Image (cartoon, rainbow, N blue to C red; front, top):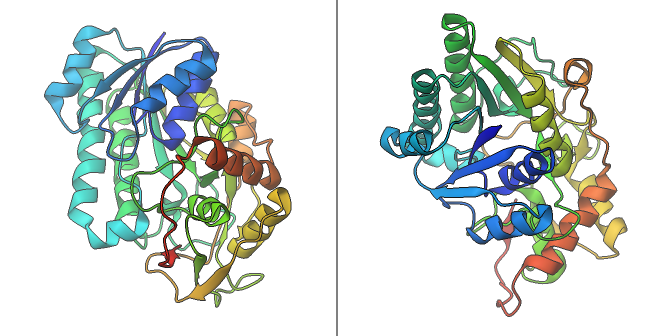
Length: 343
């Protein structure tokens, strides 16, 4: 079975490609490399002992996407390709609305034209807005606090409407929480181009001495220690969740949370990293970041019930694997920065 994975060389996409190849699927990747690296393809092949097919292209282009469908008989799509930085989406809303929504529409049109009935969409817990955690799939979605979340909610609505109009179309809308960690081989992990947008890459780069200290946004939230609480999930668990969704697709649109069901504050994650790896992480507190909410964690019981999936790796494993990747993957010889990097 041929699965097209858009954004398949990115952080979550690459781990999902590994899981798909190991499950016996043939994988075709489309990625524009705006936040990924082509060498990741070779690392995926090295881990699995199998070859994936790679196309560098813009998924917002009907013409480019149709070239793939003309070359391969596609049986299903997992759609990761999209911009994902909450703060950047506030600064560049038009870029986010165009890229994230148009790419979804282009793929959906291709599915209809070429008779592809299986679609797994990379959504996000941000669609819940400022609902009270734990988040449950049937909650009424509130207006989100940033354009990134709005694009995910809009794409969910688009795919749901298509599934209603074409009942043979099977869609899994996966709302996942905060992926961290890396493959245990140390060959693939979170390696964004430029300045990272997520917490763990900052922590690992501070641990390595590449960054001077971590800057934590806000210590006045109504949480256990005043810092933001998130549901951190190991990226390997998340990847396995995508395979489970693909294996259990049903006609219509179905929403699933992929998370651990447990909230961890930023400072607790920092402490867990220190204890897991024996490294002190210096940090300082800054003002809250626009678009962030106080607490976000999942009720993931529906995924366990209907997909047979549950997260199994703990926060220690997440911190250990993330540090192992930082040590083994990152190139040496870069100058240590003296400026404070932000989280």
